[in-house]
Image (cartoon, rainbow, N blue to C red; front, side, top):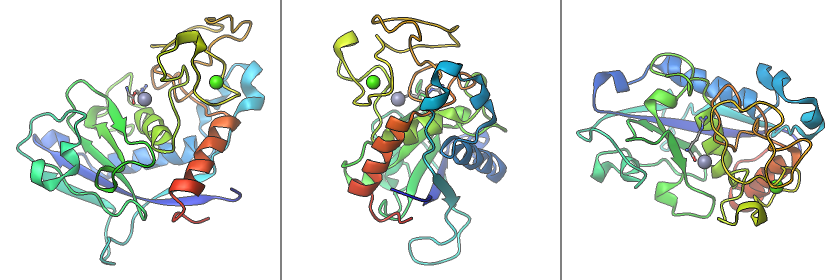
Length: 253
Ligand code: ARG
Ligand code: ZN
Ligand code: CA
């Protein structure tokens, strides 16, 4: 896949308390982060240990808040829905109006992002190939964007970057097959690592005999704090592009 892929985005704000009805400015701060992270132009890339400089991938994806709704009417790309649900889980209820959420817009034309109060989860995503009506990602309102209700250490918009990575078929960097050091994320240029890292490890952090470089804990698909995760690899980009080509071909160049 060459050139830039533009993905129209709709953000569904589903709120119970008024503080959860986040501002358009906060939504835009998240779109800005996605556009930096998926174009290799996030300023904090300079914190990547030099051993991985050559592995950094440019996904060349541009996220744009939708300016037309599914019926062709002008829209801000943000929907707002009041709900009686105090906290949602990862059971997709936020994705359906009948269960207190908002219905998805056609996922062949939009990336659906729901923002709501999630119990104790920062976010979750559906991988390519799942049911159409639940396609997209869900982010807690405290882990969305960089302003307003965003709370440290998850206030740099990286939860959405991570979840959109899943939505484009990326596994966690340690592999989600439960096989420890024998497992794989199906990407060649991410080192094998034993399991999730959290917080902000110091370099190098070795597991699975992956020295001297060790775990690539600066990767968006680890579990570290927002200020620690700063890169996708070229191999991850290739996997995301294949996902776009195969399962989301309607987003054209
Ligand atoms: N736990 C979530 C997941 O596995 C998101 C983790 C995001 N991490 C972050 N630093 N924002 O999808
Ligand atoms: Zn994840
Ligand atoms: Ca790997």
